[in-house]
Image (cartoon, rainbow, N blue to C red; front, side, top):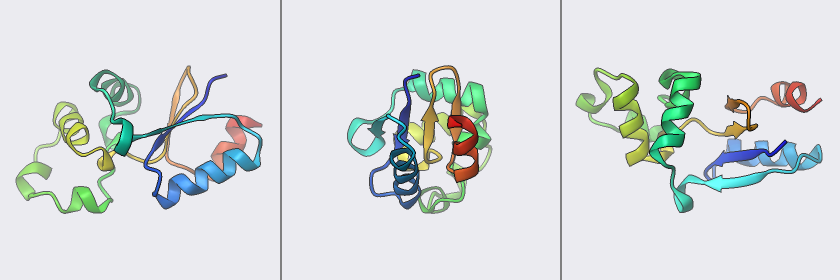
Length: 115
């Protein structure tokens, strides 16, 4: 299984997820949105699979600082456009297991995924 962890290097939750994966011997590739960006097709695929409500991090500072007009009337297309413009708004981490994606980090969920 090829595992890719998507996020931002300096994010505390990413640091926890990386430490968990490394501590449990799970090999993974890391993709940093800040340095590598994210393409429309991949992000749209995540939204189609998980729903924009899961993929868009509305609790984060970047989203909360948006003008009300940008936060209003959200749908999948508008959410994808916002996340492409500012990848900090993508839920972190996004774990790509090849056959499915998992949003966020919870140690018990990762333990269930990797046995």
